[in-house]
Image (cartoon, rainbow, N blue to C red; front, side):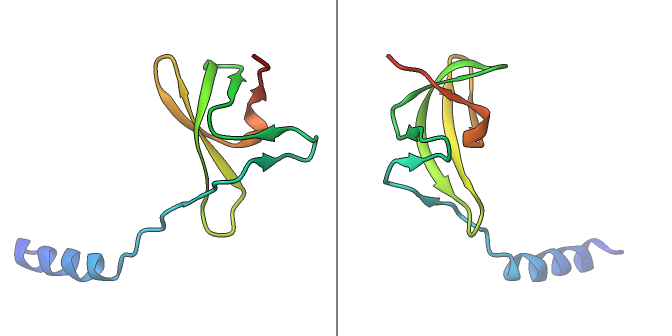
Length: 87
């Protein structure tokens, strides 16, 4: 395929692409075990250690996700992957 045709095809595809952005959740998240998670809470992950919830979001009809900042990196995790740490 020529470069010109390839560029036209890429432009046509990108014109129809609509990114799905998360909806930020501004209220505390109540888990099934009764735990309440909110922005600023300290949590622990088995691999990444201690971290802080910096955002709670939801993609369309999916379960909420946590944006957690750890010492060396930030990760997007399911609430079931962390344990709340009492300070």
